[in-house]
Image (cartoon, rainbow, N blue to C red):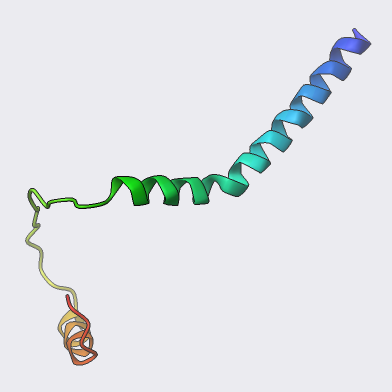
Length: 71
């Protein structure tokens, strides 16, 4: 029984190490794949939800426009 629990501990530790190493490079891999996929795309449609603007949204839009930020 002792050897079984030692083996399980080693497997669990190795699993955690593998998970940590995998997470280190995950963002790089996702960025690389998305850069390959997201090229020369054509917008096929859009969805709009009509909703009442919250207070001060118009002020925010005006400031963004003054800063020449396209919205």
